[in-house]
Structures are given as C-alpha cells and as structure tokens.
Amino acid sequence: MTTRQNNNRADALGRLRLFNGLNDLATRFLGNAAQMASIKRHDYLVRRNGPADCFFVVVQGRVEVSLSADSGFHKVVEIAGPGDQIGEAMMFCGGNHLIDARAITSVTYVWISKADCLQAIALDPAFAVKLLEAMSGRFVTLLADIKATNCLTARERIYQFLLAEPREGNWVRLSVTKGTIASMLGIAKETLSRELQRLSADGLIRVEGSRIELFDPPAADRPCPNVKRGLEV
Image 1 (spheres, rainbow, N blue to C red):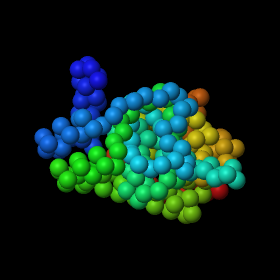
Image 2 (cartoon, rainbow, N blue to C red):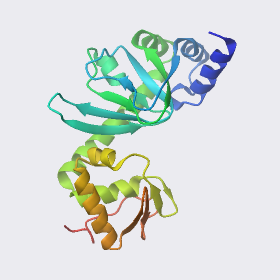
Image 3 (tube, rainbow, N blue to C red):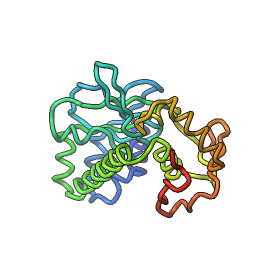
Image 4 (tube, rainbow, N blue to C red):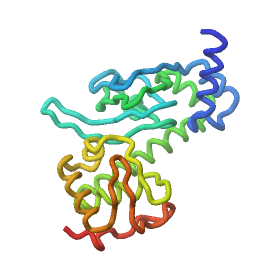
C-alpha cells in the first residue's frame, strides 16, 4: 500500500467517532489493521447468510440495512450513514449475518476482522466501550420502533418520523425513497402516500416533491409531542 493510501485511510479513521480518543497503541494498530474499500450504488456490503467474520464502518455514503426472507418479506431496519457501524453484533455472536446491507449511494467504508477487533480491545478497553455504546444505541432505537409499530397509528408514525428528521427551518428533505420510509415504518407505500395527503389536507404539512414543510412543529431539540392531538384517524 502506498504512503498516500495509508494517509487517506488514517484521515478517514480520524473522522470516525469509533476511533477517536483511543490510546496510541490501539490507534496505530487499527490504522494498520483496518481495510478501506468502496462500492457502487445498489451493491451489497453484506448479504443475508454470509459469514459474519468482520464488521464495517461507513466513511461516506448511505447504506440500507434490512431483514428479508425467502417468502418475499422485506423490512428496512435502518439507514446507516457516515460513522455508523454494521455487522459487529453478529460478528461477536458468530455464525452468519441475519441482515442485508445495500448501498443506496456510492459508499466508502472500512472493515475490521474479528481477530483484529479483539486485539484492539486488548490494547485499549475503551474501544470495547465505544462498540457497546453504538450497539446499545441501536438496540434502544429498535425497541422504540417496535413500540411505535404496535402502539401508534400509521399516521402518528409518519408524523413522528418527520419530526425526528433533520430540518432546515420547518423543511424536511426526504433523503431516501418513500418505499424505504414505508418499510422502516412498517406500513405499505400506498398508506404512506395516502396519509401524507391527509396530513397535507389537514394543514399540518405541505409536500413539494422530496421536501416537506411542517407547519408549527416543535423545536428540533424538544421531544416530540403527543401527536394524537389533531391526528385522529
């Protein structure tokens, strides 16, 4: 590997929170052990039933992580972006992956084998803490998704999704397809379109292509309100 490639990889690792704040031994070790690669849009980073012998960290781009079955079932679990990890839980459990991970843009990523991950943890236990924090955060998000699916109407789930998305003023720009959003929320694409139309007709939102304006939303740093008020179905 050339000096330029080494420098590019070191720069990429330095921008990822997983690798920040580790001691010098672990930092140097991971700088040599981590491998960097790229894939094109629609290519797969992980396939269901593939060997879970390493994990991945997204450097640039976005990855759709989903569950699927031979019956045709398909459920988007999350959209992973820069700094997000993929596959570490199954790597530690052993066996094969339960997920598919497909690039929805061109993606640059780093991957680390299980053996190198364990060696980095031995050099600096803080690396294990960072991995646990990330896995715990995703577990809490999964529980929240399960609760929303079982306790909220489709309309309430859509509105809470919009409230949680990054905003510019009162505007949200959808960065993934409506089909992906519907899968994440556990509803049909047709239901999503219908409920967006109803929210618009009720004067709560305005839809302009992939941009949605929220009328009188709570501040972005405040918890979502009880969205049942004004959203009864």
